[in-house]
Image 1: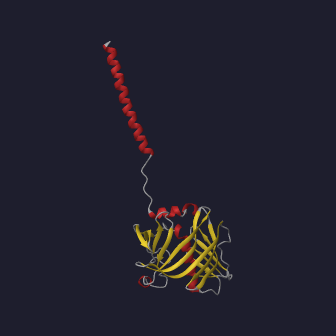
Image 2: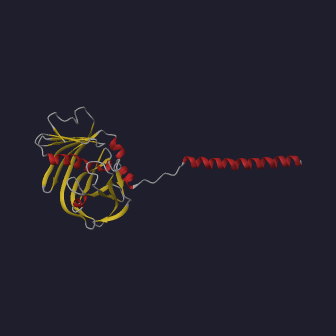
Image 3: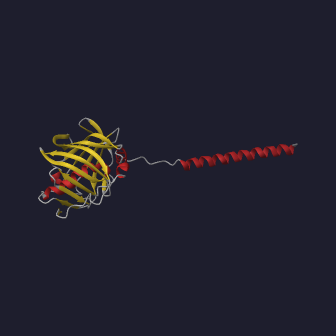
Length: 265
């Protein structure tokens, strides 16, 4: 009888130990299956909101651009841009064209040489900005909240490593919506023909608005350009642009091939 009691007690102890061990194994397995994920940075949140991954699945995007700056029309035509920013084409209503392929610019004979390189890279960069924020050579400050024109935004400053792009001394101060992470505005300087000190005496800003959903990708259909200061925010209106007729287009052999008589920079 006492032997039966001892055996029963041993069986209970064995089952209890087995239960404890199995619980430990289950707990350990759960921990392996659910690792802690790092929080997204502000730049990653902005890229996610602008659907960068979906945008880059397309070869090129094409749209019409009517741009006025300083009281004069600067661009009236159609832009075709590689989504990875490697090449592009500005086809003006006048029939003149400007191509850029990486760091080379090709343009119709008779065009203003001083402006074609600026036009080729500046307007395309403003359009592609939400998809180039984490490009190689970009340097971002820590994010913070800042108020501009009585609205609170997420804020970060973008600068560049030496040798990045045409003008690595340029900087951008980016304001994004605190709820959606969509870009609202970016202050900037242009050092293409001046020193950093001179450019910082007259910084400008671009404001993005009237976002349209193109295959689920938000794209700003209106730009406005302003003077800008750290203290006052957006000041005088300098220009504006209307973007329309957006569509994605596939690559072709002739899409970014300039005619043989075009000049180059």
